[in-house]
Image (tube, rainbow, N blue to C red):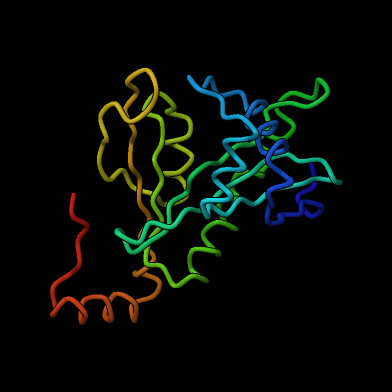
Length: 183
């Protein structure tokens, strides 16, 4: 797949079924598959979704949810279809995920946030390795966060190293001490 023809656009309420379809075809055995109504509710509640399309066909999505208590934004969902019309692996592993992540991080930085946070199913080591390759670090575990008692691995990427003026401003507002999230 040529990534030069990949378009990433913001989703609207009318895209709820498309978001559901992408997740249903991403190949990960989620204990609970979200419905179009779930995606419509997320959008209504303020989650921003972005859809990746190749020649008009949806091939992935990513979402951004506000995470003010961490001075950052949270990646809510990332899904890339595994196959389409029998063309297995054409999309997954073809660069769509990294492109969606770059778009996500660009949006986080535009919003002036210091970091990005991701909750990953602990039983999805492939996703954990993917995020680690992109510079995310394991931060902590949330026990029994997901359906069927699956733990969440919370991963974080700090943007203050690239933007030292943000880190200095944050520390100044805290009286010189680094601001740490309360857990």
